[in-house]
Image (cartoon, rainbow, N blue to C red; front, side, top):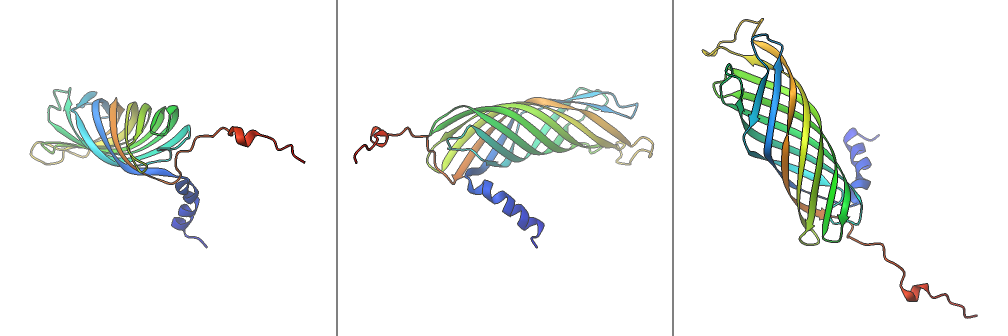
Length: 234
């Protein structure tokens, strides 16, 4: 009997052999903000503004340098961001670690042997952990979201390609926050933890370096005049 890992490889093998590309992605946070509400009555609705930041990720794409209209792109990414808070109560500086799984479904607007422009939706899954520089607050949450994206791939050679895309996303988040006093001691059990809910919205760009494999770009060729001649000889 096949083990789960072996079965997964067997199921994915036709997709991998069909051709695609793997590579690195660099997410660039252009503008982003979060609105977080707390169940604790003493903690107000707070807006966090992200400062510009970058990250690093791994990407797999089914359509780089191919004569196809559809593509599926999978991004596994990590980024570290600095945030400012709108709340006077929470006037500390914050750092946020974000781990993302991003699924992109792209449709070609134009494609040739060397260039492909595409548009499509994205489905995002995120896990985030944020802490204040004074270590009195620690917040974690999970999120799921949607984005509208557009991008371009450019072939530099038969095996190497560059990519760029931009998306506007909205993520719905649910999590919790632990709050400690300024001396480092945790406040009593009735108020040291708060359930959190909120949204994350913003504009993100990504740069890509792809290494492609598999089938080459081949357009549907029209039959030549010689091929279309019917042999009428007996």
